[in-house]
Length: 79
Image 1 (cartoon, one colour):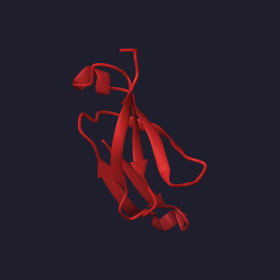
Image 2 (cartoon, one colour):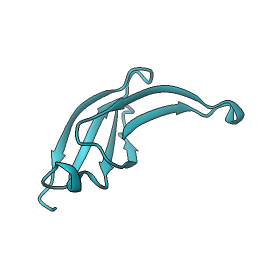
Image 3 (cartoon, one colour):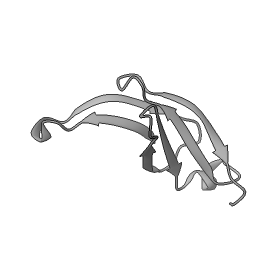
Image 4 (tube, helix red, strand yellow):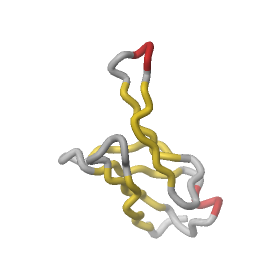
């Protein structure tokens, strides 16, 4: 799974701007943009079933929409 950024300005012609994956990805969803617009924070609903031992929240830098980068993750205390 990936973080995928698309331009939907022209809905009949949606354009993919950038895409980035991360290790142990399974089902990425529910992303939030930080107030400063520099980062997206996402959860992966199924990574605990793959290789992650606990719930993880992943952080991406999206300052350049055409070249998003994976920063790291925060590992919670739940499985």
